[in-house]
Each structure stands twice: as structure tokens, then as C-alpha cells.
Length: 339
Ligand code: FE
Image (cartoon, rainbow, N blue to C red; front, side, top):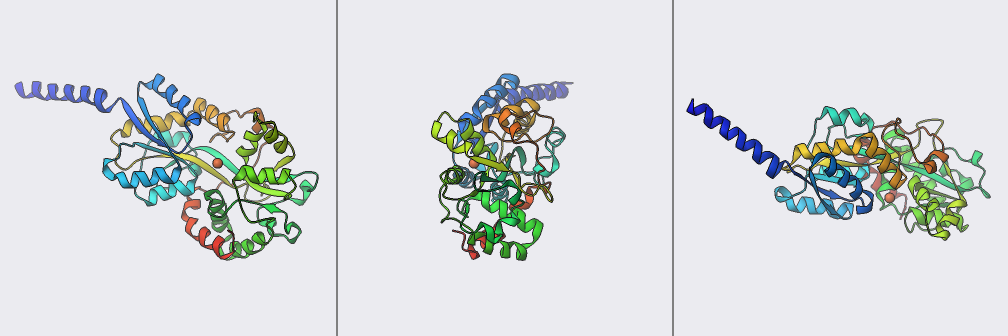
């Protein structure tokens, strides 16, 4: 009898300890800016009573920090952008596999790693933007067709050190093979209007300024510029038109922002609850709206800005492929002389 009482006391104490000490918080390392995530995290705390401790920083710096902290890291969740970067986190052994019915039910299979190491929370599309006074939409077709001679000296794109470009090329290697992609890269880089410089926004501005006729950029940058309080940015954005590449074949290249649970997390259940929360309809609407990205499921409504660009067919390939072929992509871009 005494033995049972002892066990029950112990269990009761454990339960108390669990909810009060461990169960009440989750520590997030986020490469998303505070403004793009904090209001959602506050909402999460309101609904669940789980306190969120947020550390924001650059994606690569946060990853280095996680690696250096090792088992002493306080982080439970790594939130970052690009499947290529999430793959790097996975390769650096800072994440752990999570099998959760709730999460898997909310996040489409192609948007999470094949081994359950990380999960997509928003979709970003890398598209072609063009100057409609100098380019006829019918001249455009696919990323592949940007190697055509007619584009010589007319394309603006940022550096090959940028992960968005690495993932675009990794996706092409996954779909078309390394040899074909290398041949494409040679011609594509020959068509650059200038040495790659600046971010995606700068490529859009260069099209507006007449420095080039088309640019490759993530779609949300155009969304930001169209809704900007800066009149100059808005004016530039209004001179540029978005084109969805590869609508007749594999679909437009998409990438994700996403999250993984850290290998040494001390609050795994809370971490899972947070990921599931970020994937629910309400969070999806807010998250996509705030950053002009696309929700991970079709049932979630999009903002008027995104709606105006019309529906598009997205590449259905699992985004894990973008990480898998990242190293090949970097080498191929380098060989092609893409600075
Ligand atoms: Fe970005």
C-alpha cells in the first residue's frame, strides 16, 4: 500500500514539475524577422499558455550558434528560410526527426523533409519579372528558355552565393540532370546584363530602371514593393510584371520557410505544438499575408496582392531535393562563371 502511495506521489510530483518547469515554455531561434513572427508567437502563448522565448538572427549565424552550443543549446525550434538551409541544418546534425500525425496532416508531403527532420510553413515562388514595354509575355516560357540567345545582355539576377539561386539550380539538376543543367548554365550566365549584384529587390529595380529587361526574383519582393510606403519602390514595382515560369511542364520553382525541432530540445512536445500552430489555417493566412508568401494549403485564402497574380502551377517535387543537390548546384554555378 505504502509502495503505491509513494508511486502516486512521485507521479503527481512529476506531473507538476512537467507542467510548471518544463511544460511552460519553448525556445525559438528564428531567422525570420521579429515583426514577421512575434505577433503569431504572442497569439500562440495566449492560446496555449506556453511562453515563447525568441532569439532572432541571420539564418547561417543561427545555425553556427546551434552547432557551437551543442547539447547545451537552449533552442527547441529552428525557424528559417529555404529548404537548402534547412537541409544544411539537418546535415549539421542539429535537428531531430519528428513523427506527429497532427503536423503531417497539416503540412503537404512535398513541403516537408522526407525523413521528418523539418517542415514547410510557407511557400515562396521564384519567378520571372519583366518590363512589359520591352518584353512580350508570349516570349517567355520557362527557366530553361532563359538560355535562349534572344536574352543576351538582358537578364538581371543576384549572386550565386545566394541560397535562393542555389535552390533554383538544385531543382533544375533534380529535374533535368546535371549535364543538361551545366549546359544551360553556360548559356544562361552569358545572357546576364551585368555582374550579379544586390538582392532580389535590386533586380526588380534594375528592370524598372531599364538596366535589364527581365529579372529572376522571389515573388514576395514584388508584393512588398507594390505595398510599400516608399513611393519610389512602388513606382518601380508598377513597371514590372510577374510571369509564372514552366506552367506548361513541371510548374514554377517553389521553396519554403520552415521549422525543425532541435536535436537537444528539452521541450519537444511544446515545440511540436508550436509547429502545428504555425501550420493551422489562421496562422497560415496571417503568415502568408504579412510576408506576401503563399500558404502551404490551397484552402487558405490569399491577399488581394497575391490574388491579382492569379493561380499558378507549382513544381510538386519534394523540396528535400533542393538540399540534396545544393552542393552540385554550387559547383556547377561556379564552373559556369556565375559570380
Ligand atoms: Fe527573402
